[in-house]
Length: 362
Image 1 (cartoon, rainbow, N blue to C red):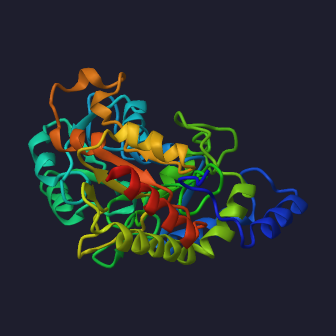
Image 2: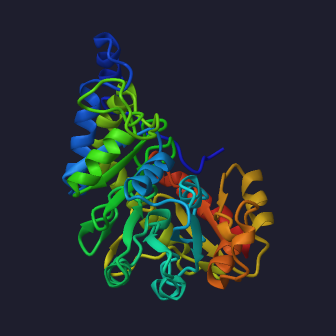
């Protein structure tokens, strides 16, 4: 079976983890935590990086650090992994679901404007499947209505919007290092920001909100959202190779595009002129074919795939939050699937995938 994604662990991962274990510092204190935070934030282009236990906890901490809570609303794209909405719900705030753009598959700035109310406190654009959201109009709306912008960059390490890395454009950027991401620590996350006050608050909140001046004194409710030094050791090895991994994914996408560009009933993934898509997943749309049956056929041929995320406004926890159709996102979700996309993928595998796909769809 050719997997959709698998981690690439051919650098210094074992060397750094072994060093970490020998040092005895295996929990949430140790040299690799600070090193990973510094090297990742330097790569993104922000002053601060704060490592967390997951991408979801990164989003939650960013929201809490901005004072978002009950009675507040946070605008999110409905087409995203459910963690985006869940992180809002954890605060007691309400996620407000917005439609997608046809061109980028990302959150539609025009639909954002329609959903802003006097309870809106923040916008979370998601850089879906590795392609940046159109950030300028989002940031303009945020400035006009005094809203925070928290970038969900869980799927877009190294992606660029007008030559700037995503995760450096809003008040905070949030990343996931789950095993299928561009770089991984197994589980884990990171918050990037240029705001010193926010960074300090997040660092306190992730460690049970313990006072820096008075050990075991907790002035507010905090969380155990820390990354371990062993995970960070893997992260340091991964960040050393991130551009190699991105280059491999972009080369994969180039080969897929060349082999599939003339195939009927297939829409290739977007890459706008202002964007650098990192192709976390190589995702396509198909027409005039039963998507789920098509995926089953590929699986019989040894090719793993994934459907697009179900729109969050259709999910049981959130179905009562909206009666809108959110038609573009719903259509994308019904037609979209992701092909094998790992940085370990070989050219002969891509050729086989495309030959099998063409045979199945025509």
